[in-house]
Image (cartoon, rainbow, N blue to C red; front, side, top):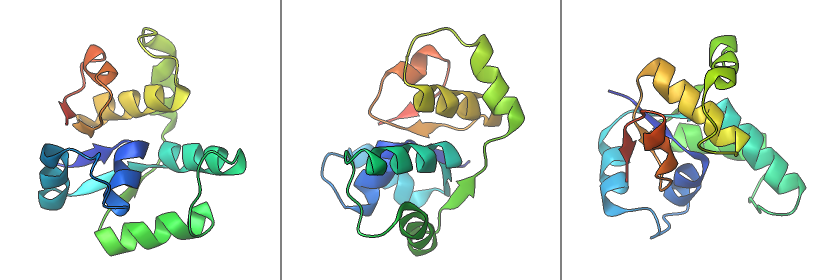
Length: 126
């Protein structure tokens, strides 16, 4: 099994933030995990808007954290991007919708505090 980290879970993990649940923390520590390119895009947008402060530019920060934590980058496939078109609008956040599509297609549980993912038939770990 491999876990898909949502953007917030990734950021809380690397910051050792206590808002990351104990169950999520245990699962990440014990299971191979991936970070979607969609999350990198989300972080870049938030950084450019001043809503996210990182110690380095997004590309450098993410690359360092992937290496330090043994995470893998999950590319965004055309299939996953297109799958969003057929999904109901349980959620308006385009990044979370892409993550839900990737999780469904890859049969990946997602580490997220957002209960919306369950509405898409995705197993959520929190």
